[in-house]
Amino acid sequence: MEKYTPQREFADRRLKVSGARTYFYVNEAQCEKNMETFINCIDAVSGFGVDATYGTGFAAIKMTALGRPQLLMQLSETIARTRQYFHKVTGTCGGAVISSDISSDVFKARFNASLVCCFRQEAIGPVDNEAVQKWLDNMTYDKKGLIHLFSWSGLIDTNMLLQDVFRVPNLVTGKMEPLISTLTKEEEEMFKNMMRRLHTIFQYAQERDVRVMVDAEQTYFQPAISRLTMELMKKYNTEKAIVFNTYQCYLKNTYNDLVLDLEQCYRQKFFFGCKLVRGAYMEQERLRAEALGYEDPINPSFDATSEMYHRCLLEALQKIKKNKEDGCPTKIAIMVASHNEDTVRFTIRNMKQFGVQPEDRLICFGQLLGMCDHISLPLGAMLSLRPH
Ligand SMILES: Cc1cc2nc3c(=O)[nH]c(=O)nc-3n(C[C@H](O)[C@H](O)[C@H](O)COP(=O)(O)OP(=O)(O)OC[C@H]3O[C@@H](n4cnc5c(N)ncnc54)[C@H](O)[C@@H]3O)c2cc1C
Image 1 (cartoon, rainbow, N blue to C red):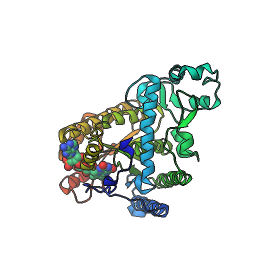
Image 2: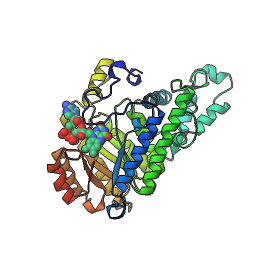
Image 3: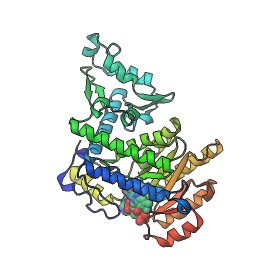
Image 4: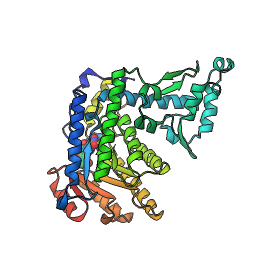
């Protein structure tokens, strides 16, 4: 897919980006150093003695600093291919697997029906075929239906190879084949290294009781970054939100993505941390989409972006209110990362509306230090605010 193919003219990811740091891949040793820097940041945020922050602090990381970014691109493409495969089998259109509400039994039935006759007539049908059966049994689902076609938690927790996880039966031959483009042994090793670094960071963050936001980056990396972050949430957000995912409200799909991620955390019973931003890569995203001929992923106007920001916020506030009523008030935490005065006012107004108090510590405000002091300082006096 063109969107997920590296492009020479966009190789400099700093193009028209001023508000975000870009990490270029040098080698694995540099990624190791970046990890150590993030660990030092966690230490600094955690503080000691009179400076201790006692679970109220935030650090931020970028996944592209922790491994070879091209792997995130390949993984993002695999996510897109997985959806295509799923829709081909089920006859549904668009959207993530979790949004389909299709049970694993229905999926299996439709899968059998979608195999072409020659495969079924050879009497090596999927039920008899060990590899296909194993694949069907390994899908992630609950009572409501399928959540993922693959075991993502298996991927981040074990030493499985990407090539072995992302395999599906070919609907014509019945043979298992990879959905991910071919990876060398070295690339598989690099991916494992990236997962190890992420685990090291989040284990440490959990020990030091520091919340860590995973920054959102370009849309050709973001499906992988977001999916991995959700799996890390599932692993580390068992008692409170330590891992925070970032939602870029300038993207057309963000509201839907947020709703589905909220649903996943509800169904898989983990705490949800989310940072809402408008987004830092708008011009570059538009230029790339136009140059490569895919749909512009950005909302058509600033107002549409603001409307989406506020809709996402309201969705999360509604869920917080419901959680409070259900006796689990701390399941969702939000970082409103914006310098926009209207958005800050909108948030404060709706916190009151939904009965969320500053002392609940469920909503935090984040601004870049020194960029917006006329908003940050009064907010700091009133609510929970951290220098960033
Ligand atoms: C603490 C913190 C963390 C951040 N983390 C991330 C991150 O992980 N990933 C990331 O991408 N950004 C991140 N940002 C950057 C953030 O996205 C920018 O600060 C933001 O784009 C500026 O938006 P704003 O809400 O401050 O307000 P404003 O200055 O009011 O909004 C400007 C933004 O609106 C959007 N916009 C402007 N014109 C249009 C248009 N014509 N059509 C559609 N949208 C438009 C763009 O996103 C633009 O940047 C972070 C910012 C902060 C403060």
